[in-house]
Amino acid sequence: MDLENKVVITGLNIISSLGLNRKETWEAMLAGKSGVRYISLFDASGLQTRIAAEVSPAFEELSKQHIKKRMAGQMTRVTRMAFVCAKQAMEEARLDFGGFDRKRCAVIMGIVNTGNSSVEKETTKQNRVLKSMTNAVPAWISLEYKLEGPNFSVNTACAASAYAIGLGYDMIRSGQMDLVIAGGADSIINPEEIEGFNELYALSTNNDPPEKASRPFSANRDGFVIGEGAGVLILESETSARKRGAGIFAELAGYAISSEGYNIMAPQPDGAGMAYTMEQALRQSGITKEEIDYINAHGTSTTLNDLYETMAIKKVFGERAYQIPVSGSKSMIGHTIGAAGAIEGAITALSIKNGILTPTINYDNPDPDLDLDYVPNQSRSHPIRCALSNSFGFGGHNAILVMKKFA
Image (cartoon, rainbow, N blue to C red; front, side, top):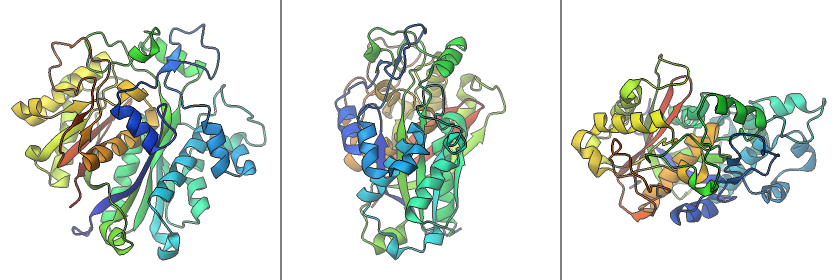
């Protein structure tokens, strides 16, 4: 591994319930807006949970600008979101693959499912297989740019796209790749999965008003709100980025992944596995605890996750935990499942670049057991040297990304 081969983020994009690109989503988050509404993708009137953070219907027109009709017919809406998100990120990064060895460019996507559910339209016998292939998501992106490096998908539940970013980091640091398109996309806004999560008591049933339902770290939190969307980061070696004069959002300084080996749903008591993974991420990246100025929390708005994540942060940082702002993006865009790690990683990079923290909205009823600085309700200017982006998933999948201001 080349210890001098830094990994930098030269492009990023987000498609979410708050916007169809990075700029729209970022500005809405800084304003503390909520993207949660009553479900419109199907009739949810008979469900316990009738709200979600849906991507705007205007996405369909946007996708037609980027995807040929025949290709679009072989893709689900989730696949199209990933594809469009990647193309927009590439355009912003001003990437011309003419200057690259395409065998040294990879695509890794965190994909839990392709969204080929009862809500997906125009699935036929002819396109069902292509629509259902999770590996089709990175494959379509590789085909678009004729990339010959590895392309594959990762499924580690809600930590999937954070895993994808970490694996991309390894490929660049080891010298195997010069550039990796890493991210994820997801949508589980369908009757069968909402009913399933309701049976597990995992979803919020506070349907009225929708905008107030997702409230991480609050005393009256009652479960997560489903979101959907896509996030993509362009990872590049510093050598490659400097050679082409690329703009740089932040340095990806390291990461850690772990398996808790405890429970298919619940995290280890008191956040022990979460704390261990944060410790490993700091150690692997060479970043000290004193250098961390912000944590983008997993912050699902469920009883156990928010409590244990808070306990884990305290365990890792001790008294300094009270000086580190911790905010929950899911309060505004819901839980985007497989896309969450990439979307929140992108938000973390933007926070570092701009010196601004996005808020945890709906923080109106503090939980006395959760007493950190959760950046309540309003964004805040705050210089950031280094930051963590936390992701935890069903199955005991933990992933922590460490990002650093690029200098």
